[in-house]
Length: 260
Image (cartoon, rainbow, N blue to C red; front, side, top):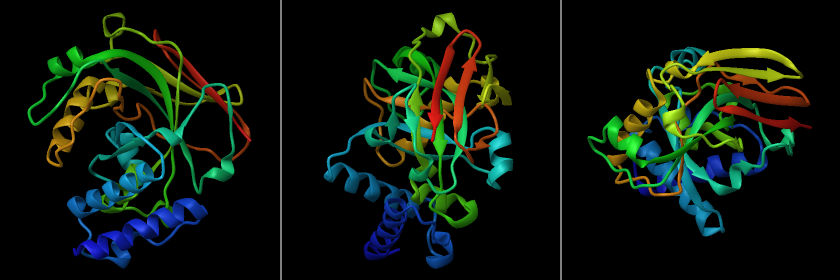
């Protein structure tokens, strides 16, 4: 695709995000959009946000668990930039009108103390680079009508990012068994979905290595202080109404917020 076409895709998605109005899937309007050109669109969107005063503070992996792939009709993971503007403080109220068709996910979040670069990054290198783990909720949202996405559509849309809420209970890796940590998502005081970190490519540390190695193809590396979201451990739940959400991992703690 020509650079001008990539800019057109980026502008269309950015406008949809700002106006909170979904658009047809970019692959329908631009049939030549593939994964590599979609990531170029994503990068244009991140650069435009930074030019307006935002910051890239990490990266995310999505649709890594089979439950998520089945739910959204994808057979490959997606990935995106984490922008500071999308982070909300735990315990605050989030306005649902900020989104188009949001879903809630529960996942661990890694905060790095070291550099991490692929290709061929190993799980051992991920462990060395991680400072601590937090419980996290990601609100995913799509600028594509009816979530009718192929992989290039969600990549161009920055991995369908919406918002991120980090919990305040940092834990060391040595205190956790991330290949087998159960998690439960609650809404209005009742459990609505459960899962296990083992669903995240067997271990979210392995998922982080996968993400690092995939993004190395685009000359992206991870830096100290960045947040890495390795993917949800459970099927995402629609965020349709006002109320209180909380997610809890055994041994890792709880993260919560309200929706108005």
